[in-house]
Image (tube, rainbow, N blue to C red; front, side):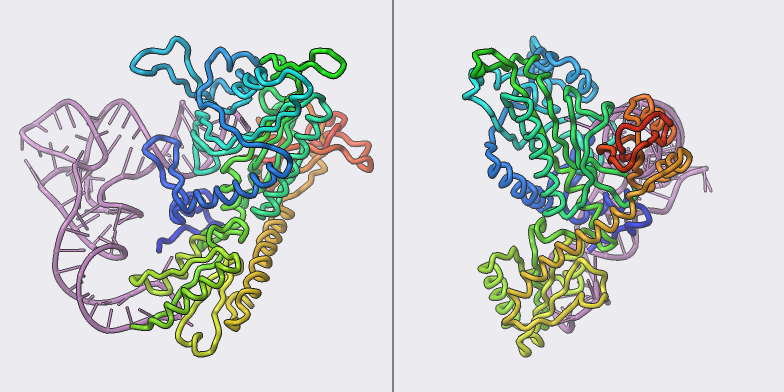
Length: 480
RNA sequence: CGGGAUGUAGCUCAGCUUGGUAGAGCGCUUGCUUUGGGAGCAAGAAGUCGCAGGUUCAAAUCCUGUCAUCCCGACCA
């Protein structure tokens, strides 16, 4: 197939090359936009499925709202519009005429959904409203990269309305938990979870919580957010209800989102010099069967197909690489590049012995146990076990990587140096002051990724960055 | 948005300094031989030299502009 630069040498080039060469995306003829190709879309569908089933389990319903938002609506929540204004794309013409009012292409949908909620909600009996939308949004970014930051991207955005603050808080926390479960359990990317500082908070939110993953270059990647919006949007968009006490009140809202950026995290965290490495739960193809055929050997091909049928019946996502113009070696490299967790080789020798050669993608080539011979009869159960093992092994490798990048600093100089050197997520007792964060950023280009409560055993503490009394523990890092 | 680099066949690139009408390898097509880690030989097809202007008898090559991609920084949920 096609070679890629070593991951350790140049993560950026490696990342772009993998995205292109594993045929996840192509650059589109529009700056900053990508085409999500079938294999990339299949990955997105796996992530979608994992999230969607959990959304449904927790009582949410899917719906769809318009792409375009009238300017006057968008402008109602002051802080929100101010935060997004620089990134909004506008439609100014339609049907050959200049529009009387500009239409924003949604950068997120709080506004349009809130407007509809105002119409739908009359009474406490209408609450809570628990809606999720799978959608594309657009943010006019300056520097773009596949999955991590593109002008148009795919995501889901949940928007809920509640009668009480407590209920809204519980919702935001619940969804954060679901994100963590999917990131770690399905995508096998370990994350640190916490609240965003005031300067990193979503425009218009009271509280923003995030998942932060750590990339191999020591930069953090925000992988999902969950926002407690308080009554900010319900006041701006007049979303009210008559409560049981006959008082008219504003609802409490939340919003939460995960995007295809999560796929970028997966690619960077797990990939290696041979290309992608996919956790089995995310892999569109769990098992690739590669027939080893010399000349005319219809029996081998037939055996490969029969094996595929049997595995499919057992619930496996499996394909046979039947291309007759490629040699096995090429097919191995191809399966490696695409990150397919398990490869099975079937040749005449194996048929004669009643065996199969099974090779796992998560370990280095030639490592002990990477390539094993399995009795044909035992393959279904062997694969079930092996795929679980690979899922666990990739997560364990990623956890070890995260653990290496979780560092602490006792003194200001160490702290600044670690931030500057991209040592990882640098955890310190912190004052929680925007001015202090801005100063750190100016010196190191690192910001807080998220915050955790200060442990009782960690008192008394002073902010490592500025010396003021510490109020929280903060993870600082440079970020994508 | 600032600094740097790149744009020539599907891909990777040479050619540009010193203008003279486009090349290599890989890939692709066909045939034969091959097939348990990226096959070999032979023949063949394939490029408005990113785009738009300008200079010139003549531009891939020189000049201006513009678009896109990559790297670094700034910005950014």
